[in-house]
Length: 370
Image (cartoon, rainbow, N blue to C red; front, side, top):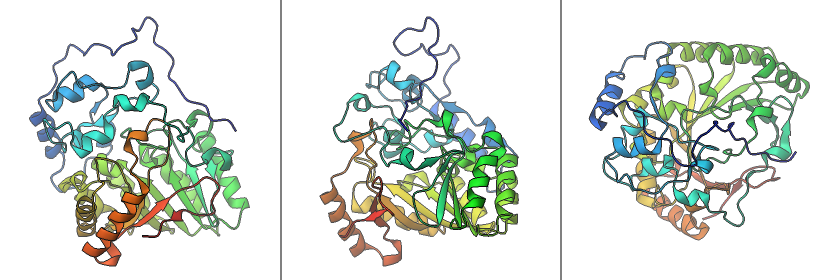
């Protein structure tokens, strides 16, 4: 299958530069922060409040909120609309105002470097398309299968390895999951089903609950794994409706969070993690090693400590998947190995994640010795 870049339909008459800012005034940063904090008082969030969470989608608006130089260079509009800026206000509220090197800001800012074609980088960085079956099922590894539940996500991370994935042709949720479930039922070797995307928590709970209920009726399926960044950038997503179906399932539950920096975990995220644990989930974290974001042993040690304080075990530290548009995030492998040695000297073994790379066609993730 040939990878195909998904691009929205052009808007008639649209100029080839960023659209003008809307006439409405931009909320001050303090108001964005206070609104976010007022939603997270330690109790469970109101039902479906996550669906109404405000988003930043324009580079100029993000710069204004953070009081950054409006002349800071960004990706040109033609390229940006293929993978737009998208970040919830709540995540913006955790960024340092006035700091263009803030590690959270760098993960979402559409830097001009994305437009550079980097040798060795590809649109299908990990070989997903070679393993993609009908019904949005990716079956690379023995005993487990991954389901592309949706192309939607609460945030567009600029290093995303599926930023060029042809979601329009590959969603399992179309047709009420029938084709996906039939394939899982027919293959008795599949004991674990991994919900991915996009982000599975972008889907409504009735849709997720329906699919999980159907999985429960397949005797050889024993474990359910959710990979999510939404629970981190939009902690109000972890509401009573989600916890209800998650707590009821007979399947063993593993929730793999995606946190790259300790500053991402505030009180609201910690509360969401506690709620997920209360539903009987085992919580793990996987990070991506990113230049200027978390490429120091001190930053990684702080992340591991913060995660464990919330009841989450560090799982993988991934070397960057070499997807086109993310070359400026890559950290040299020799530096990564050196950092792992330093990290091991700073932390107990259970807080040291495994350094890994995903190689197309490999039977498992490749663990790097250090």
